[in-house]
Length: 484
Ligand code: UD1
Ligand code: MG
Picture (cartoon, rainbow, N blue to C red):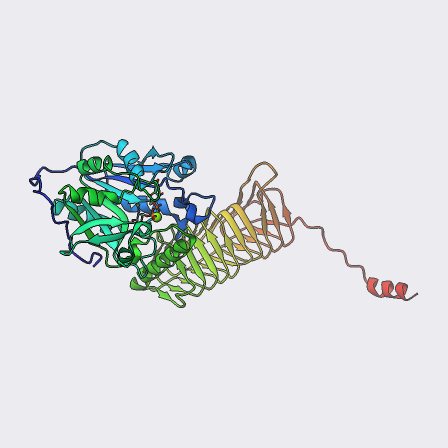
């Protein structure tokens, strides 16, 4: 269960407005992300810092997207251009807030960019990245079901720190939220805090925003004042407490960021463990939030799985290996000490130790790539082997090919990248260079130490090295000369 308690709403001070039975439209989302983020001590905007490899704002937008909102507005400040570039291609509009006068002012900017009436408005904080979409959906559902003007999420972290405290009355109804720096000594002790995630009835948001006054202490407009304003006017406010405080963790400092990273990491590990993955040393393994690992895969210590990586059943990833934005099919094995990015590794293929697979690498089934082999934009066909010290770039290599130690595709002529083609069943001897564009035919042989600059026909042998000359007795003569 995510949510701990049923809502406790403010005891209405005056007669409550009659319940509206009209069908509300789909939810609209406003994400607040214009704050200066000065507590991060960073030249990078706070919402572009990453948790589990994903920018904070992107994590929030991903969760919001799952609610299928009719519109989404992100409120941005002076670093607008940089942040906007990070979500290019999404159906998201931007509202501009400058200067940042507080969360209440930011919400007002956001509201100006959407239709004033319509479905409920979900206001999210760009620095609260770990919320699950199910929790947001539950907040939206609860507000509607209980016909509230405002429902928000609260939680109980181990230390309430700088979070806003949720002040309830004797009957448990929500009265207001007080920021820790404005709180009395008694209020500071309250353990239930505000997550910064609110679902408003559209009209209630518009009305209360115009009522929010500048905070005397900080000169900011606090969105949290909406709670007291709505409750005091006889409106209906409720809070749902999230059972697991980790989900609502907000990021203001680098310490908060480090704590979030650990929460996210543990969450992904648990997801993998629950799905049947063996993790030999959970303390040293990282699995990103968008990574999928199938059952019976074994992850060794110090493995990092990043980006949109998918690992099939019964794979094994050995120590000190990073795999990013890649796919491993069933039974593949990678590592130790490998770096794999943007690659596809086919069934039962084996990579490593010390291999580097770069974007565009495709290993079909039963391929073997060994130590100090680098591949880029290269397809290696079924059963092909490249076991030592090679560079294979912009290459199409057929099935059953043997690439000897130290073979290099010379793909770059200083201007263009050129392709190398190696036909099925070919044998490329050690220490050969294939100067692209060039083709080695099916079943052809390249003698070790050759520099191949012309196509090799199918079934031919190509040797381009200087033929060997032996000078009999030369060593003895040289030694004798030296002795004189
Ligand atoms: C806020 C809440 C606090 C809550 C906490 C949860 C207020 C006054 N306080 O505090 O009760 O416990 O979040 O994480 O709302 N922003 C703008 N424009 C501004 C100011 C902020 O867009 O002028 C954005 C920030 O970029 C951020 C979000 O609003 O994404 C929250 O602002 P932040 O300054 O981090 O508020 P907190 O101090 O964390
Ligand atoms: Mg914050």
